[in-house]
Image 1: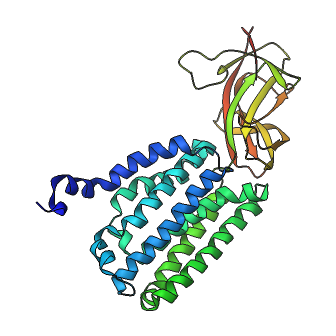
Image 2: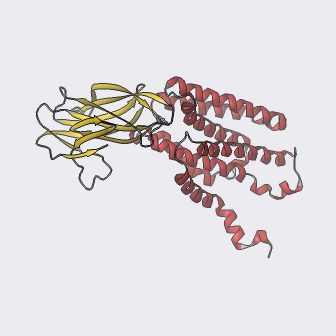
Length: 358
């Protein structure tokens, strides 16, 4: 029996992207931790380079520009050189962007990333088409530069985001020049479709960012809760809080805030930022009205510095405007991008406090 017709070979070939999907995502979840580390950036850049080289090899054979026998023999497998590294990239993006996301504001972008990640399994035929290949490559390149540019510059905000997307356009333009020189006829037939798709992707990123749909990467909210007191002493925060009920294991503090008359509520948060990155954040204290709308009652800014593995710790508090009802403390960038939030119910009562350290 020929190797190519062996049942195991047929099974692997038919399901190879699914196998790569599962094993790659598990591996990335274990190994990809911080975007400011060398390994993570080496992985992302390697995936981008391999994907682009795969695009060149696919069309070298298809156009006959460079088609040695050994390359022609594996012609059917060449789209995998594009598909697999892009799948790895979207796997990593799902991990990093999800860490930074407040799901109630960022779900459209996360859904798009997840669709590209999962849909990678079904795009095998499309990975033979230059327009599709280059469009997905540009989406991946932009997603990576949005992640890494704040780390390089040490700043985050509107100007940093716009710069990262313009840089992605510049790098992509250089890549298209390589494609044009190697495959002039193919490029001439595809150039309109490529740039329409790419400019569409560029516009989507701008709209998503300025409507606060894209998460504020690479910042990550590692902890947030409402406390009855927070005191910093010798690098340690002494806190008093009400414990959450057992079934609300995901919360750091209780949903119910029993308030003595005139007492303050403290919002304590820990925000991870890469080394050398500094960001201006704010706690937005908001009250829910009887109509269901959120009204901001206070906004307290402070500066976050990166580098600490468990995040930069900070807190704010309010007293005078606090009244019974539903409240939330939203942790935001100054431009309004939400890093995370905690919702709590203020009631008049005597709290049962637990004391600890943060």
